[in-house]
Image 1 (cartoon, rainbow, N blue to C red):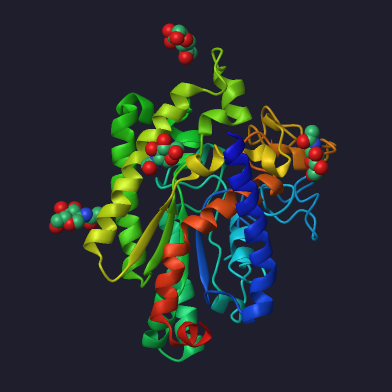
Image 2: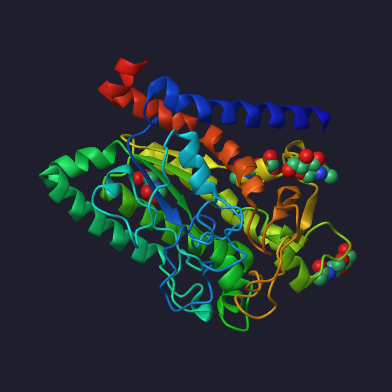
Length: 365
Ligand SMILES: *[C@@H]1O[C@H](CO)[C@@H](O)[C@H](O)[C@H]1NC(C)=O
Ligand SMILES: *[C@@H]1O[C@H](CO)[C@@H](O)[C@H](O)[C@H]1NC(C)=O
Ligand SMILES: *[C@@H]1O[C@H](CO)[C@@H](O)[C@H](O)[C@H]1NC(C)=O
Ligand SMILES: *[C@@H]1O[C@H](CO)[C@@H](O)[C@H](O)[C@H]1NC(C)=O
């Protein structure tokens, strides 16, 4: 354990240093463009104008963010923001909802709170942008890029040099399989069958993204959903540190996703996919970064409205930096720094491919 602490501290420290130095050394990010697909863990404002309780554009969300509440489900930055920072971007990747023509050249964030691999996932909360819909939105971006760059071919060429991060599936559990009062899936499938059904659909969606020209794709697995304060409050932990049965259900998804990544790498040889083991990252010792409270939310979580999200305008804890969880589902800025450092490190194989493939990158090296 002591060894773990040191390793993590060293890694986080090194990466923060790199993040600070990279733009100075190279004067530009390590990749030209970064596209993000996902749910509330990466949403940076796409749900703000949707009719849903799955949105976070109100206080105390964003209390530690320079712009205040933005729609991010955190007190500060989310994981996608920090990964972009580690990649050397000096601006956040813009949300699809508001991205301008010039901005889409750096990539687009399609993330939507409540969204899932399955279209119906999250519907009890209201509107959301499912992964299928996010892929349609990406087609819109592709058309805009073709106009900007002069041709479809130029856009395709550009898109093949981008980095992609696709993090989906949490809501297919939290806002589908684990709420049988709203969805029949837990009566239709065993946990293992459900994981297989999800991965089958996910596989098609990832291949669609490949068809749209993505060649460097990070695929994070799911975190320990059974350790979120919300699931612990719902199920009780039965003397354990977390809801073990929920973690077991979700582990099936992760096992199958990691096998899918191997298959995709074998079958689509002109592309590279990287599995990001979120569980492995999260069990590194977060006390190395000052996190001591891992089982409670910092803000006051609602028991009704968007169950587990912060109650609007109530005063949160005074030391969010010591908490893993901002609300009953979502990490604090500090926890996101910790998680993003691990994810970034798991994504480095994708970066080396991109550098090899780009003349500009080679010249810099
Ligand atoms: C609690 O633990 C006991 C003993 O291990 C087990 O039989 C029971 O099914 C568990 N209950 C829940 C809700 O996990
Ligand atoms: C990979 O190729 C094999 C052999 O053609 C095929 O059976 C499998 O379904 C493919 N996997 C994916 C994820 O496309
Ligand atoms: C992720 O890491 C955890 C902890 O090291 C390990 O138990 C698990 O098997 C890994 N998952 C996959 C899919 O590789
Ligand atoms: C709480 O976090 C601060 C930094 O944000 C750190 O200095 C302090 O040691 C942490 N407290 C505990 C009890 O870990």
